[in-house]
Length: 289
Image (cartoon, rainbow, N blue to C red):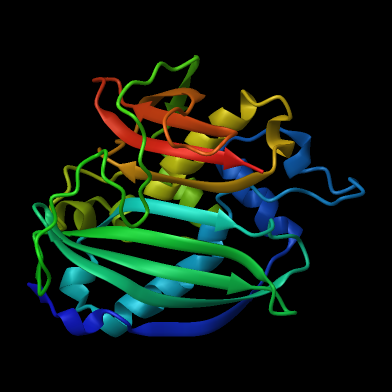
């Protein structure tokens, strides 16, 4: 299985979608949120979108672009590897959003081919809403690109540099039920069978169905917001992370957080999620406005 260099620059869209309160609330509910900001439709400002909600309206573009550039037997082998999101402003109920996706990078890595999709979303007036760099690893797939030796401390697509020394100031335990990937799939409207169909997951070389990377990141961000002074109302400007392990179901996640050091911008929190065997599943960060 092989991905040619010609996929870089391929694009899909624009794709238009309407955002409504039902979708915003369903996404928050899938994450087990209880903050009224996500559900109280009587709020004068309207309900809030979870910071990771953009993945919901971006997913159709990811599917369109994959179908345009990758064979089916390659596409099914993709797992989420990196994520970087810039929120120019939060999506809101009533928005009509247009998204364009482009293949921004292709690299050869030890586990397989690494592809970054850049997804840019604007509102009906053409104003930016969100920009995402979504990195996927296609396990066991070769590509026409130089090898990458990207380390945890090297900056790259969807990744951010931190100093090695870091001491978390808080931690919390999250329960991951056996049905979470099914609930998340339907509420987010993000369907990838490796997260819900065991036969497909095993056929793709995975040990079993695994939790979506975006769900792991969203749960981690939720934990960080619960430790922020303003809670769910904290305005998030940027966030991202590297997925370094798989989250099985059922399971538990231990999320740790603390102020980022080194060259991180002010109001940046560094985050880490680990599985019960103490393997790191996610190394992430979140920057408040």
